[in-house]
Amino acid sequence: MYHPPFVSIKPPTTLHSLFLLLVFLTARIQGHPSHPATATSSTMSEEKKDSELSPVGIAAKLARPNILSLHPYRCARDDYSSGVLLDANENAYGPTSLPSNSLNPPDNGMELERYPCPYQLGIKQLLCEYRNKQSNGGTLREENVFVGVGSDEAIDLLIRIFCTPGATTGGGDAIMVTPPTYGMYKVCANVNDVEIQAVPLTPDFDVRIPEVLNAVTPKTKLLFLCSPGNPTAKSIPLSTIRTIASSPAYNGLIIVDEAYVDFSSTPSACSLVSEYNNIVVLQTLSKAFGMAGIRCGFAIGPPDVIQLMNNVKAPYNVNKLTSDAATNALKKTEVLEKHVKSVLDQREVVAKQLEGLEFVEKVYPSDSNFLLFRVKQKANELYKTMADRGVVSRFRGNELHCNECIRVTIGLPEENAKFLELLKATYAEIAE
Image (cartoon, rainbow, N blue to C red; front, side, top):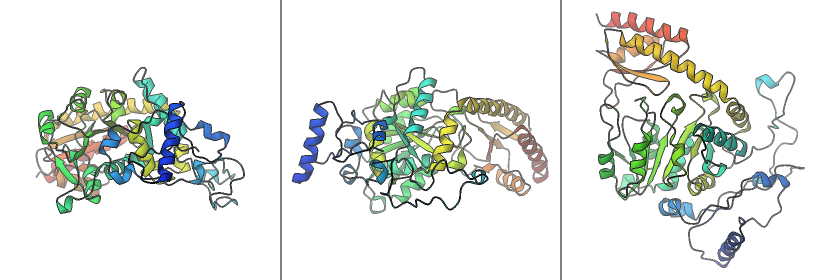
């Protein structure tokens, strides 16, 4: 597939790079994207030309210099995807085996011996269509979307692209988190030797906007906001995101992690992407879509940020099996919506049951597919004993503001009933 050309922000230092820059600018003046001087198959026209990507913008201001000057790896499928393909050292005799449900009779319709599309254009189009429909006239386009291995790949890429390492030596850049929150932000920052700044949520799990804006520094490149939160289950109002995005006090990117957004009545921050150039939204097929096993997630943001993510990612990061399953899921959003309704109905049932238990001190409001609740005592022992007896929830008492708290995912009706039954019996036993 045709790969949109990378635009280097770094001034050309050689005659060759000057020539490439002149080619790009000439094509831009003529109203066409720059194009590599190699022939491509007719299928390359399916790739959305990146005619609106500017050599300036927030990506150019924030990204590490070595990322801006990076010439991304050009894989075989950037040039051709059809014909007699003898360019990528693939095994033309076919795969050694197939997925279990394709063995009898054998069905290799996905051509697993061939590399996948590097940019997952079909998935991007389907996602944009669905999210635009949800927002009543949204304007998301394929160039706004990065497809990755879950949203965790996007988290890691964003930190690598925008944050210079150096925390262990007192230098480098920083991310900001608002605990209690998803733990992978800190893990990825630590792996990349990036400083972690933290401004805790209120005890009611609200973002403290003045404190956040007072705490950011010139080193703060990324602010992670989890909405709905994990483990808080609480959505962040779009007004909060707007306030931070428009504040002159913060010049970095706002990363809104929306893994659970389909369970929430709060609209997605995707609607803000076309309005603000400093907002990136993370989403996934792992939760509401029920596709955790395929590991497929998205970053939705300004084209210049998405282009850098495509430049840095591995050439074929999303495999064909994942792509096929993701495509089918995005074509069946009526099933998604049916399952979401079932989860929300059961969430109400479980919440009412928990609220009626004498030993449950609080059930937090939920915009997600789980409930966070506090018991009077021995939450960790309660969780472990129940897990050993076959019903597994998650102890969250070691998180800020979550003393003696347990997080339980909403399951099938019979699973929820079993959880509640064992919860009551086990607490009565350990409380003696």
